[in-house]
Image (tube, rainbow, N blue to C red):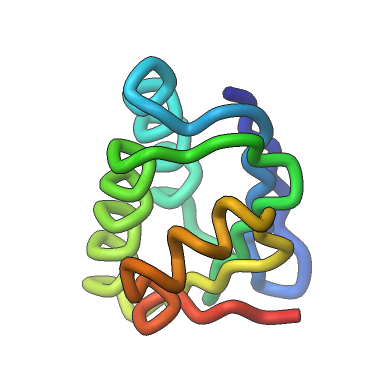
Length: 102
């Protein structure tokens, strides 16, 4: 798993690349926590276009980051989900808390 990021116009853009599963969850969680602890942004967009696989552990990572940002009133949005990620987000209701944007 590789995480790329940039801040532009008070938005933190995060690109998740690879597989978000039990093997990469700890690294991804720590990386996202470090990024999300910074200031200078008022919303987060997570791009899943390069996410090849995500299991329940990956869902837990995203929900945990959502909860941290909710306490700071910083919304998280999802863009470019793969068919696999789209199915997971719809099935689990994650789009209710992290809306999909185009």
